[in-house]
Image (cartoon, rainbow, N blue to C red; front, top):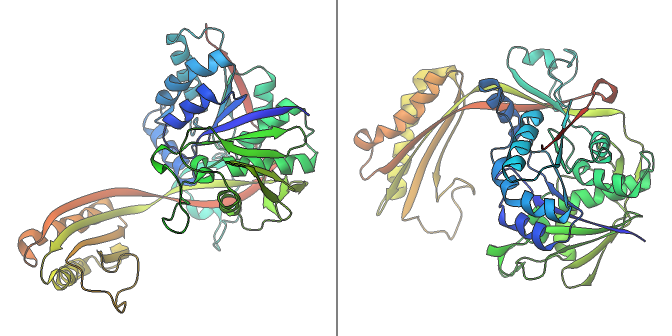
Length: 445
C-alpha cells in the first residue's frame, strides 16, 4: 500500500517559521501545507486590499517562501497554502518573483480564486445565529468569502503546480486535496474523503496536535515546549494515517493530544460539515503504536450538503481602550475609584457607547471578584474599553483613562491608549454551484 507524507508548516497567520523549515529539510515530505486563515483574518486582508490593490495576502508569505522554497524545490516537496487570503493572484505573483530571485526557474505556482463572492450574495440570505439577513449589512460589508473545497486545489496539482495558493478554503481541504491528487480518490468516495478530512483536521492547527495549547504542568506535561515540532502524517491510500513529528523536536504526539485536536471546533462529531463531504468522526480510533506515533482510522463520510459557508466581514463601529496601573497598599481601592471616575466621565456619551467593559487585571478581568481565600492584590492594571459608533467617541475612551494621571487616584502609571475599527464577522450559506473557483498557473522563467 502506497504512503504519502504530508506536514503542516503553520496553523495560523503568525505561526513560527522554524518548525516548517525543519519539516522541509528533514521530513522527506511529499507535501507541506501552510494553514494561515481565520474568519477575521480574511476580513482584515480584504480591508488591506481595499487600501492597496496589490496587498491583501498573508504578511508572512515572503518570509515563509524565502525560508522553504530553496529546500522544497530541491526535494520535490510541493506546497499548498491559503496565504493568498484576499488576493491569491498577487500572492502567486510575489512567490514567482521570489522564486526567480532564488534562481528556481521552471517552478510552477497556481493561484486559486473564486472564493470572493461579495458581488454574488443574495440580500435574502439568512445570517447565522441572528434573525437578520444579508440586506441588513448593506453598505457596511468589507468581504464575503465562501469556503471552497478540495476540487480546484486538486486541479492545480493535476496541472503540475509546485506551489498552490488559495484564499478561503475549508481548512481540511488543504490537506485533502493532495490525498485526492496522489491516490486518485473519486470525489464521491465518501469514506475516503471522510478519512482524508480527519487527517486534515488533525494537522490543520500545526503545533496543537504536538502539544501546543495542550501543556498544563503537573497535569499534562509536554517536553521541550520551546522547541515544539510541527506534525506530519504518513497517509495510506485507504485514508488511514499515522500522526507523528520529527525526531529531536520538542512536544509530543499522543492519544491525548490527538483527542483534543479531534474535538477542536467540532459541533457534531458525526456530522462535520465540509464542502466536499459530511465527515463522520464518531467511530474514530486513536492508537499509540510507538513514541510520538498515533495510528488514526475509523472515520467515515457521506454526501455533502450542496451549500457552502460564507464568512462576511463588515464594519461595526470602533473600539477605544485605555489602561493604567496601580500598585502598593490600597491598589485595589484606587483602581476601583479610577474605574468609577472613567465611567462617570463617559456617561455623557450616552448611547454612542454601544458596549463597555471595565476591569482590574489581576483582580476580576477573567475570574469573578469576591473569591474566598484570595488575598488582595498588590498591583492591578485598570482596563476600560468601549465599542462606539464613531472614531471620535472611541478616541475619547483612551483619553479619559490617560487623564487619570493627574485627575485620578494617587500612584497611577504606565497609561496606554489603543484605537481600532471593528471588523465584525457574520456567516451565511449559499448554493455551492453559485461559487465558481478558477485556477491560474504561473511559471518562473
